Length: 308
Image 1: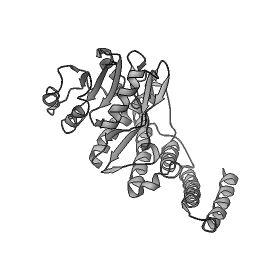
Image 2 (image 1 turned 90 degrees about the horizontal axis):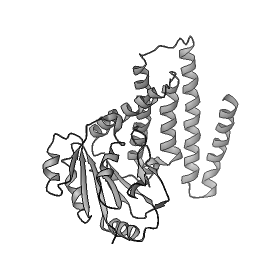
Image 3 (image 1 turned 90 degrees about the vertical axis):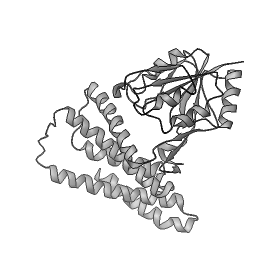
Image 4 (image 1 turned 45 degrees about the vertical axis):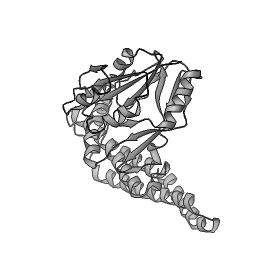
């Protein structure tokens, strides 16, 4: 029988860690890597496992530190999860099936993100495949930047049943994590000697909003989708201005700053209207309804091509 080690990373997860641990009690080994929790997390963890290790709370190594836990695993297969993630019965059965037959070296698992009380089914949030199941020694994080994919030596398959992620439960929680994650990304840009002009602080956030809300159809999640798309744009805005901060708030000498800003604003007014037409076309039920939207989209497309 193939055996499985579950590796859990946690920082101040007292409110969520027990449900996570209960969902993986069936595993052959549970390893918890704690990042200097101060909220009683360890007291809960000790009820489920004695394999507890400590690592510094270092925002520059959020993911790469998980490799430490992987090396502590005793068994051939590793399942890597966070304290706010859960394995249900169907996923458990599928995991046992694939590790027993060893079809692939690693598996990406779809992730069901519950955000502000709702399963978010569109945009970057679904199916949100994450490589979390792999044979020991076949996968590791090589980039210190948060949310970079794990690198696999070998073949990668996909599982069908999702991992449940009890993601952001409050707006404050989202903003707190955003501060940490954007700091990590900004440090990575600085390390690579990246310099952003002021115009990128306009283009990149708006571009991220357009991508998540329209192109990836975040609008289908209603107000949740709108809020998350705006927050995603703000996330990128924070990354850009944190890089600016770390470079000494360097001021650019743009004599036409206001005119250039207006030019960007007018451009994105047209682009937002264009994507509204695209979305109306995708959502309309019949050909007749789509005609005015198609005409308006064509007009806006021509305007955008002509001006830019």
